[in-house]
Image 1 (cartoon, rainbow, N blue to C red):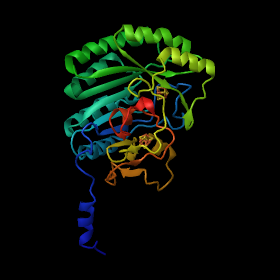
Image 2: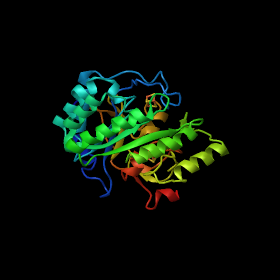
Image 3: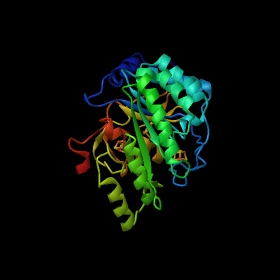
Image 4: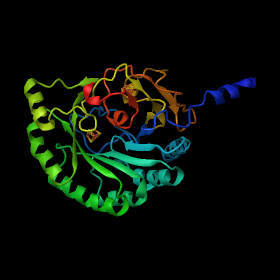
Length: 315
Ligand code: SF4
Ligand code: SF4
């Protein structure tokens, strides 16, 4: 049976808006490009069983086509697993994104990719590279070698992406807090921004001891601003445009309104926004009060997606 004549009119009237409702809101997608990672950090929030897989080329190209249909210029934050652990990432996903969309690109990476690959990505992305968030994992990485590569990468960015920025993430791992002090000093002495992240376990935060909390305070100065530290706070009840102007996509193209929504999703959950690769993706018409008791990623707060009308460090 044919759909009634008015159904296309209803769909048109219910289409998501073409412009964000706030001038300071940067529309953002986190694309978890590939599940696999070349590291196996003991504190990884993703279980080894889930940290697998990479997209078929056809799926990735269909996701890019879905992203190209978003209105305006979005920031596509590419993460994983480890995006660079999948060869297709730099070979055809980034070139496809650059060619077929007008969006900007950021990376969340463990920064283990060889320098020549990182330099090639600088060339490919040019003015559209925004933020490289490089996670320093002491279980796998020598900080001196990491900073040497970061300095060479800075030279490449100065040539190709002078408006881009670079930040060094470090998880506040119990037992390594003391070691992080000199690392922070070395990172800052090299001219880079150091971004500490409270450790997550399961659905919540690691229960640090009083001594560990004192060590964290010594390291972070008790910062609470999501531009300075990721404390994975609760924004429960605060208006959030996730699902409308921010969403998360996995390697199969499935989209969720945010990371926590994805983690908690049940089959048929409305936080599932459909699939970008098969054409069923639909953004929400608008945001809603946050229903969750943890917001594990600072991207929504730092892009103006979470709206609470005050200072985040007062929450
Ligand atoms: S590098 Fe990141 S994704 Fe890979 S194992 Fe470590 S924490 Fe997990
Ligand atoms: S505040 Fe964070 S956890 Fe809550 S809905 Fe928004 S993005 Fe998700």
